[in-house]
Image (tube, rainbow, N blue to C red; front, side, top):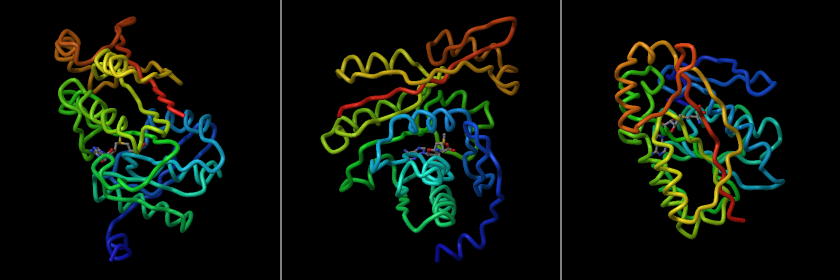
Length: 246
Ligand SMILES: C[S@@+](CC[C@H](N)C(=O)[O-])C[C@H]1O[C@@H](n2cnc3c(N)ncnc32)[C@H](O)[C@@H]1O
């Protein structure tokens, strides 16, 4: 059945620059395209993963993170999940081209991994203000459950992570300037979740957002997003946070 679905789905093979490599995956317009956060998560994961670690790619989209790490022999098995059926099909399609060693599940957050334990969880589930979502083309085909200040999913994830089963795993996740970063930090501190920031990058907001300058100003005032202005260019940040309980 899955083979039939994939036969009927038109994927295009697209090449992405990942760190110093070129890496191609099959993708289509309904699947989230790897972006700066993808690259930063891969870069962070590469530094953290120890030999034989069992690693979960949560919000795997096309499966790019797991496939890249597998191809580079950093992991031996691809575990991934996504809430989108189309993303799951695509991630399985890409994984199958590389290996038989994969387990990609349809899952809302951790819900379908209840009986599994991991050494590292790489979370890439959308964490930007849903109000940005409405004016941006990025999330056109990817669900964003993060609420108007972009923190809802991250805080839900952190609460789930704290439960015994996942608490022994390391967790890496992005915190974007297009969300209420302070709220996430306050949650971490309040819950004694020690974190380090592995990578931070500043990047200019794209034209399709900048054209809504007044709206962005309003969101910033409401502490739903943050950015700085330098020479009329608006810059925001992406940071990769790491919680390490072991
Ligand atoms: C920003 S994209 C990242 C995709 C991929 N990791 C990449 O780098 O290209 C986030 C992914 O999370 C998925 N997602 C959103 N909410 C989710 C949830 N509650 N549970 C699981 N996956 C979710 C979306 O379908 C989307 O594929």
